[in-house]
Image (tube, rainbow, N blue to C red; front, top):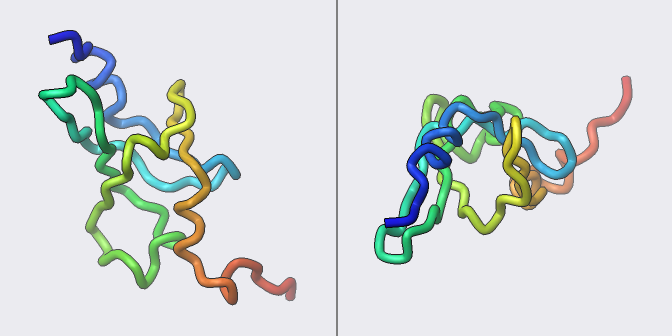
Length: 96
């Protein structure tokens, strides 16, 4: 099997941000397709409560498809699609 287990375990604990710099969560686990020998998803925990409020129960996690990942380094960058969970009325907060 040529899936590098060190690279996979190195993902666990990394913070995940959108392309726009919004904190999404932290990698808790990875989903693997053993037949294809590839990572297919990232299980995130310690989620950004503002981002997921009303969509995910507090204390729960989410699974992000690995195809959303754009870069892996000190942090994991994903497409900004996750920010679309906010409705248009919540996208911009008025200044006080």
